[in-house]
Image 1: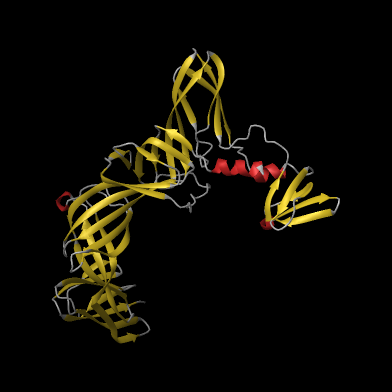
Image 2: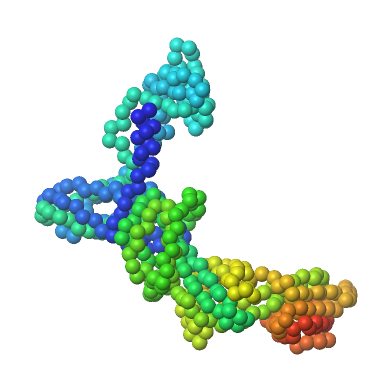
Amino acid sequence: MKLRVMLFLCCMIHAQSGDATLTIYKDGTALIKQPVTWTATKGKSVITWNKLPASIQRDTPFLNLDGATVMSQRFNDKVFSSADYFMDLKGQKISVKPNDGKLVTGLLLEINQNSVSITNRNGILTFNREELAYMSAANKVPNPVFKPYLSWDIQSSKSGSLKGELVYKSKNFTWSTVYRIKMTDEIHGELIAEAVIDNASDLDFAGARLQLVEGNLNKLSGGRRPQKNTAAMAARVSTGQAMTREELGDYHIYPLKDVHNLQAKESITVRMYGPLNVKYKKTYVFENSERRQKEEPLEVKIALKNTESNGLGIPLPDGKIELYTYSGKGGLEYIGADKMGQVPKGQSTEITSGRAFDVVGNRKVLNYDRQRKSEEAVIEIKVTNARSENVDVLLVEHINGDWIIKDESLDYLKKDASTIHFPLILNAGETKNVYYTYRKEWK
């Protein structure tokens, strides 16, 4: 019984790191630079450090010390496990308590995640693990270890305080960007960018300096992909622009201006950019290919230029972008979201918010003629704008092979070897029909 209580209490306690610097990457890892201090004697001695997350990558720690030389380093992660404890007790006396029965004592024969088998004067008894209230044993655990720890053999030139920095990498840290555009009208809006920082580890960080890295860093193959942590996290939001931006070689790093307390299983949200006044172009897109026939609402695309003249001109990390607009009563309403990739300064991005209720396209193949060495099709595309304002429409047509366009009712733009565009403007309440013929020939 004492063993069960002790394990419960240990699970409730988090170790805490102080004054560390965390550089967090988008692959689920962080580089942690931890200031450390010990009192050492002159000559050889051993120092230890156990304020480590369980998700530390064990081949990454290294220690920089002032006034001492590190002779060797050991990493010990043999933390106490009840499974290992009872596995080592095979052939020894244990007690098991069924949920609806009396305490039974005997020699442990076998134990696994499903069952426990013991032997006593009544013979061999096997219990389903799910039907047991608890197991107990008289054996004590000498100096149980509850967290991994590092130890070093050092050679110091003098006695007294030793200061240094412990550097290591750990999993279970990540960050992401969330953008929000408040669309005030058809071409103007307000952009806000926020960073959501997650500490899914079991270590609290007090007074931590946080840095966020954007970019795809090369990693050694063969390692396990970072696992998504499913534990519930507390969330905090910090308002006001809370970080700056610097270049980190071929990447970008965003240092937060203030120190933060980042607890285990907690996420915090901080402002990156904004609010920034931006312009965008809204286009209604109808995309099809060759003999496809369909009728559907058009996709709503928002094109945003990352230029200084457009209120931006800053490196935009990849992330989720949410779109909001104001209803007739003045309230802010959600109108869609999309994934936005990295947008360097001077480039553009396109966001899909959904499909328009009042702008509908209808595509028909009016005639199709296929011969042994040729193919020809006559296409009709009808677009209706039932909105009360003019809209920009883009018809995107994909045609494979060696083709030509003829008899087109509207000028088109050839975008690449298999794509043509028909841009047009529809007035409020207007319907337009676009016709063209494509012909393909082969030997």
